[in-house]
Image 1: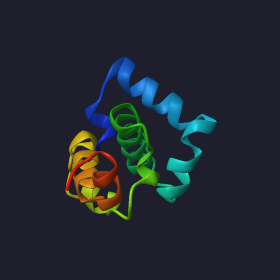
Image 2 (image 1 turned 30 degrees about the vertical axis):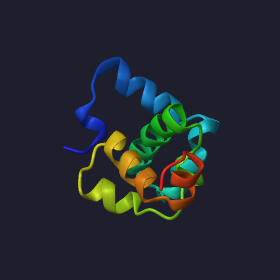
Image 3 (image 1 turned 135 degrees about the vertical axis):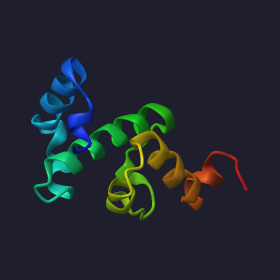
Length: 95
């Protein structure tokens, strides 16, 4: 079972609709045709923007594919990527 299949009903439909919209184009392009990975990226990006006010694409290099392949939940991947981003940490007042 892939990541998207783990979500049913309305949530899955909303993710797919957003992925297929103009908003999802960057995620589809980054995922190079892998729709499940693109959907996972989209959710991670939405979480990142809601929590930090920036896109996942604004964070320093992070292995989003590695996190996806390791079956890391999008929220946890965002947390790890943000913690690893030195610039973001400084902007948020961390050391």
